Image (tube, helix red, strand yellow):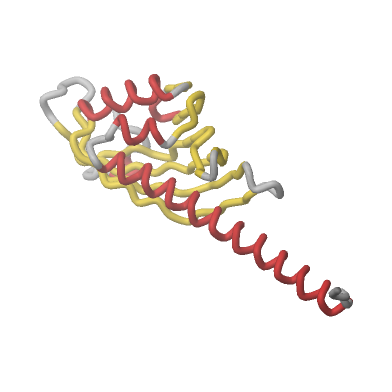
Length: 175
């Protein structure tokens, strides 16, 4: 028969605490990887299948610069399939992650900044392309399903979308 001492309980509590802390760190890292995977799919000709798989079935994608609120994987997939027709090249730099995981470890929120360089067709003449720089702040919600993190809601607030040769001081939002 084993007798548990106060010292044993203290050690066990510390190990439990360390386990919770490690899980939280792993969750934060997994959410960062999810966001960076999203950016990678965007840089891969806005890979619609890849992007849609990162969302829960009824996930929402809302970016004010696109003027779209998309709900569900099919709507998200269709949007990105069409987007790749207008944006022929993009490079998404996602940075400054600030992630908070809920106490139960099943949901999380996160903010990120985006600096994106891209080639976008002109509004009045789709045969001509412009080099564009854009910036966005993301405020995302995440949910863990079967041990894996997904986007529940991706919300982007666009600061500027400017032609490279004009910049944000001269042209905050291009035509």
